[in-house]
Length: 287
Image (cartoon, rainbow, N blue to C red; front, side, top):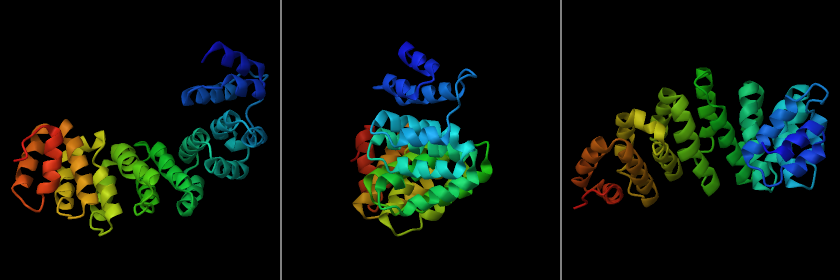
């Protein structure tokens, strides 16, 4: 935290703090919110009213800070905080939206049942940014410390598997499923992926394949290949290209196993397209 921000936090003035945060990174905003909350005793802790004031400001920096402060104001007014959270999630400024989506994930960890019900309602929102926030929140809330959250979170994100909007699908298969849920809940997530792999919907299958494109998939590579082997039979380019991408990422972590698998696919005309695509980027032979 730079000295200007430190001085603004020490002053207890939200207006000075907002001004000092111009151009700050997300970590800078988060640290400022934390410092304000944990500040010297003479400084009032963030309240819902303070967040409401910042959230209605014309300055994107003020609204962004409001998102970070919501986590600390929540206990003093849960219902009002959730109303403000939804408003900030719908903000047109991407940085404000991201701050609120991150806050949603932290609040989901804090008050799982209440936030799960609230965030679930966002899945039907006409804005893809709001629907994306469901996935950001779920991914940030996931933790191996709470294995009982695995199924509710998987059911939550499962409601968006057919969503074709680019920002939603990018946040679902590769990020939320492949980057977070598979990491914290490998057994449960794999079981759901296996179940979802029986769908005929190409977007669902794309998400299933791309869930194996992140680093956590390397720990279950042999099981991942079982599903990818099946999806490689799909003749739709959208699906088999996702399979190829996932196999390519796995191949960089588990080269010997994947190259052996792809060699078999090259001998199978039903799987030759994804095999050639993956081998081309892995540097293997596609002949």
